[in-house]
Amino acid sequence: MSVFKDLMWYFKAEKRAYLTGIFLLLFVALLQLVPPRIIGIVVDEITNGTLTVGALGKWIFVLAVSGLAMYTLRYYWRIMIFGSAVKLSRLLRNRLYAHFTSMSQSFYQKRRTGDLMAHATNDLSAIQQTAGAGVLTFVDSLATGGFVIIAMAATISWKLTLIALIPMPLMAILTSWYGTMLHQRFHKAQEAFSDLNDKTQESITGIKVIKTFGQEKEDIEDFRKQSEDVVNKNIAVAKVDSLFDPTISIIVGISFFLSIAFGSRFVLNGELTIGQLVAFTSYLGLLIWPMLAFGWFFNIVERGRASYDRVSALLDEKIEIQDKPDSLDVVPQGSIDYNIHSFTYPNDQEPILKDIVFRLGKGQTLGIVGKTGAGKTTLLKLLIREFDLKDGKISIGGRNIQDYKMERLREAIGYVPQDHFLFSATVHENIAFANPAVNKERIFAAAEIANIHDDILEFTDGYETVVGERGVSLSGGQKQRISIARALVMNPEILILDDSLSAVDAKTEEQILSALKENRKDKTTIITAHRLSAIHHADLIIVLGEGRIAERGTHDQLMEKDGWYRDMYVRQQLEELVEQGG
Image (cartoon, rainbow, N blue to C red; front, side, top):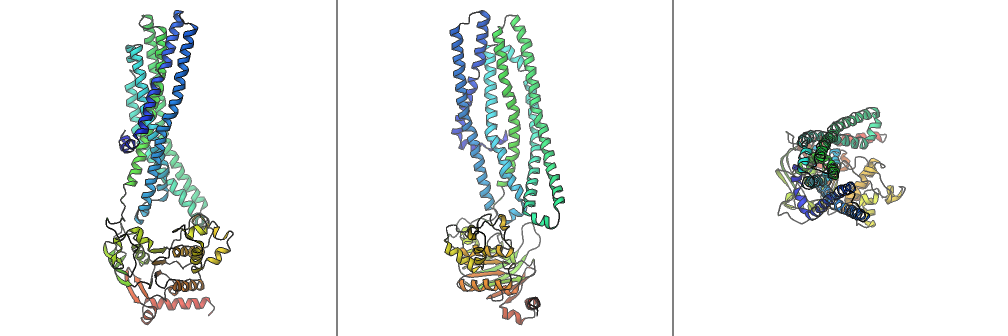
């Protein structure tokens, strides 16, 4: 029942629909008492020989009217109650999705995609059942059962009613015990489904890697084991679930036995008529549904409680990156100042960045180089606030980036990450992602700068070509250049290329960089790269080593030093010379 308390906020919001549905449900429960009573009267009139054609026609008419009324009212209470339950599912799904989009990078490092999808599908479906079928079974079992018991006691025999109800406490004890077991097992079943969901999503996404390494059989076997685990845990749920109906059927059977045995004795003693006994057994038949509904109710509620706990835990996850109450509602621009004392990723012990201090003037280009793991990408993630800096600050135009609204900060930044993600949409839609209303001329211009325009025209449908999920139909270089075009369409104050030219050849790289230099004269550009030719033109180059600035300066200044930059540049020039046959 605790899940109903948790959902009380929604029941209050939709009280009109729920109260209307419950009122109609109660009216139907009352109308259900009419047929057994009429049957008893007709049987007695037949027994006494007093039944006339007119009386029979009257009773048939009453039965027809009550049947038609029940049909109509059942239609409308379903719309009210089940319709409200669907709205709850929609509301929670929207909340979950909004919550997902508000969470920081660290949230997605802890959570798996398949698990998040399971929360938004299976768990919400179980909660919807609780708010729909759960409310139905609760109200209907109490109302129908209560009205039937009152009718049996008040109109026929209170003694026989008490005798028929003797087995009921045993049913309450057993169904409560079953419900506790069901909650525990269903929680484990949902977790197993989340694991399987994640496994499926991961395998489909990585199918190329699986095939390349010839791991199809191993992956299928791994999937089979996880699928078998899901089946076993759901069978464990089904074993408890299957106890409800037999238990209730046995108890109902005992009630029928007691009713007929003692009812027959009451008829012989003259305390009841045959028609009253027939009506009593008909009423008892109406109690079968409330009893079954009571068992079903426990099933639905325990599933809903387990799922609501899982969804609530997810929604309770703290949003780490948030706007300050008095955040600046302007797009930041100006020079960029880094003053980082240290930065450590959540749950890590050692800082990834230490003592990072430099200034990049508006309109300048910054090159960031260093060994893998030196902290290049981390430096950029702090600028776009994927993580918040606590020991130090980063400023744009003299104001801490945390003083700006995140929406405005990210309007100022066009970010091209290492992992290029394209949506299952057309090339045009992918490039225009940040601004769907942008005109074609601007899209073409961005594609020209990114040196991808000619490639796109050669595609089957040009800019209307669907690239496939995650850009699966494109080469690495094409995906990189479309991602660059997508960022350029924004015409951002700050363009970040995070090792975004690694999949193109040196000639294409030079063409892209020249176009960027020509078209972004008054805009700031930040480039991280392993190939030093991508940043040799930068106004400032910093070399990161073990999270610190090991070297800084222009290309010419760094070449005069006997350091990592000079050694790496010379080595890469020699490698390029060898590749060209020199």
